[in-house]
Image (tube, rainbow, N blue to C red; front, top):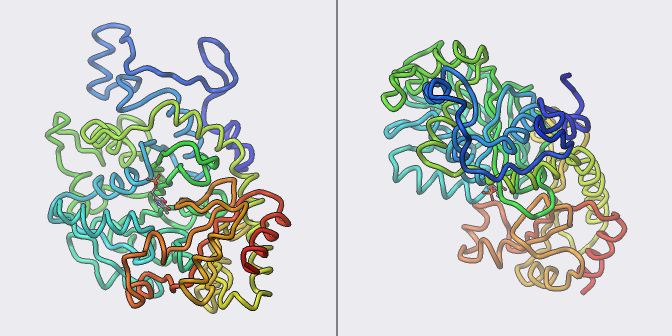
Length: 429
Ligand code: PLP
């Protein structure tokens, strides 16, 4: 049975009903590296992709499989590939379409780890990332050339919390045969990028989907809505024979083999996971499955609490500015309304006016944790100017969108009165 509602998908999405061997309702942790082949023919078929099944846990695992199917269902995609971290998911998304000499156009509004990956590591490997300000979606088109293989953005990036123009950029991509990849880490359940034309969604599962701050993980969801073979020159990795796989032409062969348009997911798995490693460990997949069961409920509470905190902060004289997706004006605000449903996320920024005030606020928090993380069930805070961005001068801070007094809050699911009480006493101090 296919479910539409995220509350149900978190518990029943995908194919898993109970363990086929033991009838266990809870998903078992298949802590195994390898799988006994039925016979030599089956083994040959599995390796030749004539049949799909378990071979080796670097490439697939039954616990990860349940997670993959559920997250794919949650995003409205056709297939998903779990990997060891959100960083691995971002890297794989680009490496799945680019080889040395190719480029992607990415939003400037990005998680810092993604900026490092794009500006430094991928560029050292010959993959160029061109940065476009998403304020005007046409900036993506301006930076496109014949070697552009993908567009990349984050649905709700901090620190600015300007929601990405998903349909606008996806439409430009469709004209040129370029898929849009969206990092939806900050907005599971409340934002559905595939419905607005994105081709691929990725998550750091470490954040809201895991939700309890226990496990690092990432996932890539193939929307199954992108035509990889329409313009063969635009997507050579999906249209030219792959010498590492008996000359497979992924864009052509995967739909034939599977009956589904899941070439992006299959190539991520059988080429990138095979060659680069970085699988999600079964135990982490299991922990994240526990989080997935309640993510829809938690997102409601995260969003409702964040809105209450925003209102409270707006009433405080010591707070110079409150940053939230709906606090922007004009088109940027309209995007939040268009692309987010049921809430605007749990990230809230506030400017306390000076570096000293920001640091002092953090030091006086009693319940909120001071950590470099987001999306935990617990409320979290960080002052970038004294931590993650402490090497930058005021001008560089401004370019990164963090004023010296900027504090980022990731509002948890505690009672809102307790969250506000802690913020209030820390502001007073
Ligand atoms: N994408 C976003 C938006 C993130 O916030 C993060 C981590 O903070 C990542 C990707 C990377 O995820 P991970 O820490 O799981 O590697």
